[in-house]
Every structure is written in C-alpha cells, then in structure tokens.
Amino acid sequence: MAPSTALSNAYECLQVTENEGVVQLKLSRPDRLNAFSKTMHVELKQALKEIERFVGLRLLVLTGDGRGFCAGQDLEERRIPEGQPKPDLGDSLKNTYSPLVKRLRKLPVPVVAAVNGVAAGAGASLALACDIVIAKRTAKFTFPFSYLGLIPDAGATSTLVRAVGQARAMAIVMLGEVVTGEQAAEWGLIWKAVDEEDFDAEIETCINNLTNRPALGLELAKRSLYRAMDNDFESQLELESQCQKLAGRNPLFWEKVQQFLDKK
Ligand code: T3D
Image 1 (tube, rainbow, N blue to C red):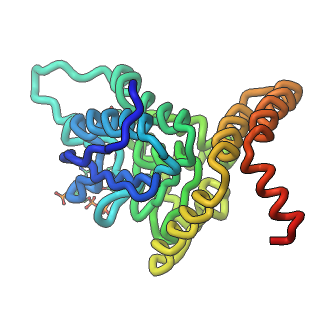
Image 2 (cartoon, rainbow, N blue to C red):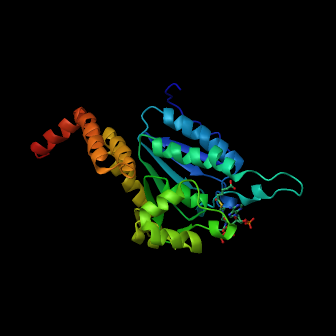
Image 3 (spheres, protein in one colour):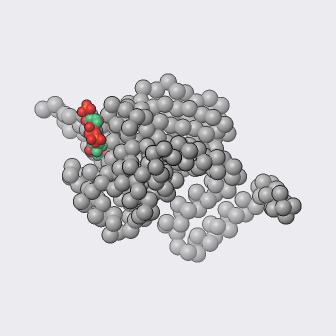
C-alpha cells in the first residue's frame, strides 16, 4: 500500500490522534469498558493498516477511554439466540485477535500500552502484546479465561510464560486471580506501575524518551529482542551483527558519537 500522510479518525469505537509522529489509539466503548466488538475489530484493522503506512510514524500508544483499558471480548456478542449456530472461536482468533497482535509486533516503531484501568481477557492479552506496558498502580489485569472454560488468547499463553515464568503463569491462568498493576510490575509482567496522579506524566516522559532516540535503533532492537525468544545463542549473535551493521550505517550514530567526544 502507498505511504500516507493522513490518518482517519472517523470511527465508532476508536479515537485516533497524531502529533509529530506519535499516534494515540484509544479504544472507545467506555460503557462496556472498551470490550472488543465486531465493529471495533474491523476498525482496529483499518486504523492499524493506516498507521503502518503513515509517513513519519515514531510511536504508537494504545489506551482506553473512560475507567477501563479493555474488558476483552464483548460477551454480549456471544449471546446467541436459541437455535442459531454458535461462532467458531478458533476462527474468531484467526480472523481478529491473532492478526491484531501480529500487527503490533511487526510495527517498526515502539508500541506503548498505557493501561488506564482494568484489562480483562483479551484486553489483558492486548496490553501484554505491546512493547512497553505502563499501568496505573490500581489497574487490574484479569485473566478470567478459566472461569469461562477458555484458554488465554491473543498471544497471552506466550507472553505470560515468557514474562513471569511457568509457575506464576500457570496460577494466573488456572486460578484466574486478579493481578494489580503494582503486582504486575513487581513480577515483571509489565514495565512500570505508577500512582494515578503520575500516570499521564509518566506516559509523556516515556513518549519523549522514545522519540528522542534514533528510530532505526529502536526498530532493530525491537526486532532482535522478539527474535531472541526463539533463536539459539549462535543465531542471535548473527542477527545482532546484521542489525548492528545497519545501525552503524545510520549517520545519526556517528553524530551521537561525535557529540559525546565533543562533550556536548
Ligand atoms: O469469543 C471469542 O472470540 C473468544 C475470545 C475470547 C477472548 C476474551 O476476552 S474472553 C474474556 C471476556 N471478558 C471477560 O470475561 C471480562 C468480563 N468483565 C468482567 O469480568 C468485569 O466487567 C471486569 C472485571 C472487567 C470489570 O468489573 P467492574 O466491576 O469494574 O465493571 P462492571 O460493572 O462489571 O462492568 C461495567 C459495564 O461493562 C457493565 O455493563 P452495565 O451493567 O454497566 O450495563 C458490564 O456488563 C460491561 N462489561 C464489562 N465487560 C464486558 C462487558 N460487556 C460485555 N462484554 C464484556 N467483556
């Protein structure tokens, strides 16, 4: 698709804003704690396609409208009238949740989740699929899948185990206990949990820091760190050398070195 210089904000369930390459994508169904509806999935796909093509994209921030981040699948849409066929949940993942989190992983810029409130089910999975997660200390991460007889989705079986290890991941999933923002940060499930009054400033600082770093370095670091989960050590060394070759061709690296040498 051709590069674009404009982003649409004509959505029913999303609010998209942009400032100097920093795009904020706000899930917006506050009366349902921003649960994923069919429409929201369609709109997310459209918005992310546009964001991928957006010229000068530096950063994507995902957050929620109102008091919640995202309550996962809209269960009202799983109220199926008697006699009607039930949806295939495998297809639901293949067609909506999996492509969504893949898009975030592939985006060549940092994706920050600003978890402003409860993140439940696929909403929690969505947050964990982002590169950096900052939450309010009081935000809740809940994985209610076991109550429903489901398994975690949108990548959470992978992100949970890798972040907190097998023992905690098993208990979080099987017991379905709520994990507060504070606990999540202590366990390394997320980057940081901050007091409510410091939340906006913390997100702003994170945005400023990231936009002040050379974009190519961040892109290559993101790619390398995700590959590290699957690569053996030798392959990872090879990847590092390939990526550093590209990073070293960036004039910004040489400028930064000169600035250091000049003690600026
Ligand atoms: O189906 C597939 O495609 C498979 C994929 C599944 C992925 C999943 O995400 S499965 C998990 C689905 N999500 C949940 O099970 C979470 C359900 N919600 C809750 O447990 C609670 O609402 C929360 C813990 C998230 C928040 O609790 P609380 O007390 O802060 O708020 P509340 O009063 O429960 O919710 C506020 C409103 O949002 C309420 O509506 P009302 O009464 O004001 O009209 C509630 O019904 C609505 N809401 C919350 N979550 C959902 C929802 N409506 C539809 N779907 C929801 N997931």
